[in-house]
Amino acid sequence: MSRLTPADEYFYHQIPEPLPAVLAPSEHWRESLFFVLHPRAGDGDALVLTLAHYPVRQEMESLQFGRIAGQTVFARHTRPYAGDPHTMAVGPMRVEILEPYRRVRLFVDPAASPIGMDITFTARTQECVLRRGTLKAGAETFWDQSHMLQSGWYNGTYTHEGKTFEVRDWWGQRDHSWGVRDHHRCPMWMWLAIQLPDGMLGVWHWEYADGRHIYTDGYWAPADMSDPVQVLNFEHDLYWIDGGGRRVDYGKDGEDVAGLEGVVSASLADGRVLRVEGTGRWHARYGQLGGGQVNMRVRTGDGREGAAAYEVTGAHHHTFFPVPRAEGLPLAPLARPE
Image 1: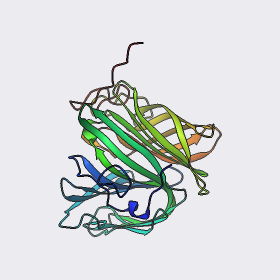
Image 2: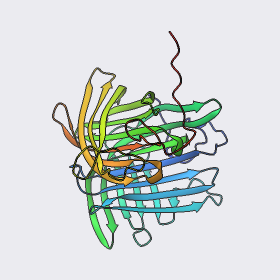
Image 3: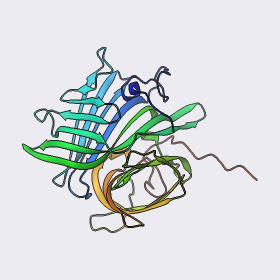
Image 4: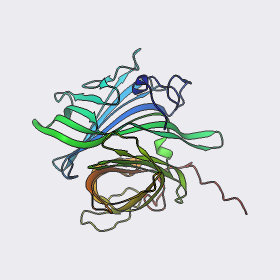
């Protein structure tokens, strides 16, 4: 597993490699932080905060969204670089790295955003560095990125519609990624952050429209801060459900979809196989990008219970997005004759 330096925590990267390697950014190059938090029971509210910068646009961006009191809420703030592409602040929000890979403060002024926050992330696992992922077709690059993920505790408060709510030992995940990602032309990616009492299973998985695998990587990260164990193989049997829990087809826009249900399985480098059943409902929908995030209640094959955030998104996939919503998508390479 790669090791990062403290400087890799910040917005200094120019290519999908840890510092100090740099290169001029492409059109879809970005660097982003992503925080998701939810109660340990997997029910109730779920919050997401992002911060990103885009060299070509010369812009910083922050999104605050999630589900509060059963309703989805969304806000977006931007600022031009104006000579400062590194300060982790946009409008009413800021991210403060209190201790690299251990504590991060998230703040959003409730007077200037539908979701106010004053919440601190405290690591409960080591940080996990996924291997660099790349998707190309000829000379065209759709995705070329490095990615770090980590589980933690969240504590503090959030505010919505004049009411302040406490966050006490919520579970959640954060990640930090940098490189090229053309989201609109992704066939399908699945990102899982499965929180259990003894650790987190984190997986990032990409597929072509026909289901052939592009990329899989992830870790089982123990909550005792011991070394993470790499995911060697990943399988999923998930399906969309409607508000009544019945299986439903996504169609083009997923109008009848309310959540996800099903089973995922991860084979680990130490020989263990983690089988996880789960069900949940949207806490964020991605509109034209397809799919979104679902707050899940989960149970492992050996009886451990927990909560998770599942993200399934993309433009065309035989199971999840049967009606294409974009042109020029990358195609699976033809099988070579024997």
